Length: 235
Image (cartoon, rainbow, N blue to C red):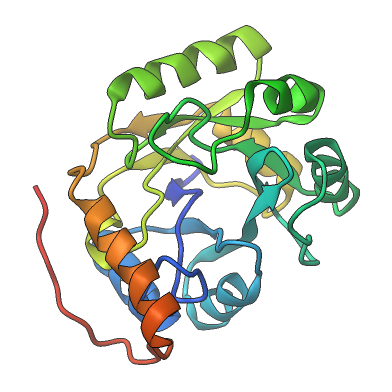
């Protein structure tokens, strides 16, 4: 009988401009919450994912949340960093040339400026492998329902993700899926059998993210390197 893994495909470390979570702290929290397969998807860099993979005793998919000329896409199973600012189609093609998977993050969240435009969505439709049908950081749950309908319309796989920027978001939203062989193709087969566990996070988490961005931008805050940090329980 195949082992079931607990997976989350979207999260950030202190290598993103809107997170202060050190890679070591992320790993510590994942172990504490029983996560056994994660994708680290920092903004426009692989550095956090590579560091987490070096530290983690569980499966780490190297990913990147990439800012295209029409909004954000997520690349998974990457070997090389993809620069920001490319067209959506070129970005997806670069992901696929690496043997990776393309995920469409939070496609209908009207409160985020980075969401892919409607035109961009249509352009990348033939290239998208996964749609985030539940993103825990979507403030309006109608955005998740529309994303689920989009995945069904396009006939692509759906995922549930935490989009965590802080330790206390990890382990709340995740997927239970069969153990896979470590390849992108094997992962897609497993994801088709996933059970989605969905718990939205409080909208107040966006205040934390905004303050983090301001701190890093205005005060030049140094990236945290310690695994230690304040713990907060959000129910």
